Length: 231
Length: 293
Image 1 (tube, chains in turn green, orange):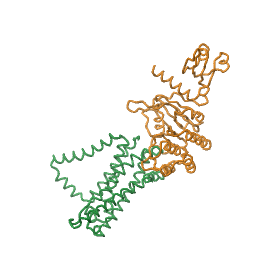
Image 2: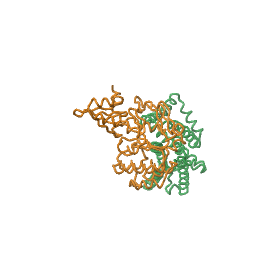
Image 3: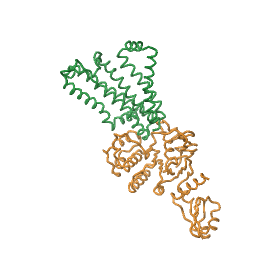
Image 4: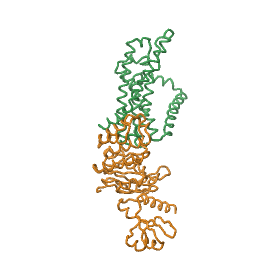
């Protein structure tokens, strides 16, 4: 167990910047938004929703990819097994997800308390998350964060196992599968059913439930790929 | 040199159409410095990767400390494998790699690591990707030595190291080995430099193990005979001739086999021992010719 913790710590080691980068990008995005919206505050509509939140999710995905492509070859060189590496990475990603989600819940509460940073801005919560209690908010932030980190790690695994061809196949699959599904739904005239499903499922299951399930499935599949990777 | 700690049985590794290892069988015993010799592309790195669970053999079996090394924490906890092409995360500094070594190698000696960092004048705060080729090699050497792993592999660890730094590596290795005996496998093609260091030679050629012999036994085994053709032929009749060259009216033959010094003297043939490097070159070349024929 100590060894798994050590491997998780390695992810943070030399990664001070990468742990801090998503927060840094988020801060920059917040500041930019504040400056921009402050400059046009006379003409904005009520409660503009900005894209600052997306930056932390993108940064988390990039982190997942780097965690595998750069740390796996190093770890294997230092006699770490793929199983230990995966467990260490999972531990680190879980801790990171919790930290970021707590941060987002806090920022959300600050936004609410300051009347949208004094500008009626809505950078967090997508305009509706603050209707829920903090624990539910936490889950709705955390679950997609976890999914994005695992998605990045999955692409990292494709690279570690099958190099560029693996990544390109993964990207192609990520385009073709949803596209094909959308086309199929269109041909079958089932879009109303899909809309109905989304409405019935509700925001909590959509943001907290499904991403978690997908993250677990994708994470499991990635481990199977990683087990025979020889970077 | 008692118990075998590594057994390789008919290990074969293919990458697509290329056969990197072809039925390699040998044992490594506890305690000893092994020289894994061979030309570039002979299969040295692949063999070490199979032995440390980083690659899976296509056929055959490896057993390290009584178990399959692949995904085996118990085995790998006793193994270190420092390869010339070791990759480090982009953001890592020298000291991060050392911290990793401290956290991951159970037998790590921090004081020894610090002393080695000083010896090699490694800048602890510098990013690894900004190190010179020689410093990068030195970092690998530090990790490998300070790991004190019961089974330590060094895969051409000296790239970019100057002669002084290489000598430092050999000196530190030998001194630490004397104090903390372990099994060290040193893959190299700077054979003359390590010939005093290694106790056992494993020679790989085109993925095949062509020599598995103690260094001492080898030294007497291969000699050159210089003299008149008839006399040389008579002496070499029961030996394996590896190489022959004509020097004016004389013949110089490199042979593998025993020749009594007294007989050589009596026949007017000069008998000379062959350096390990010459020996490897001769055996490898003879093998290549055989292969081509």
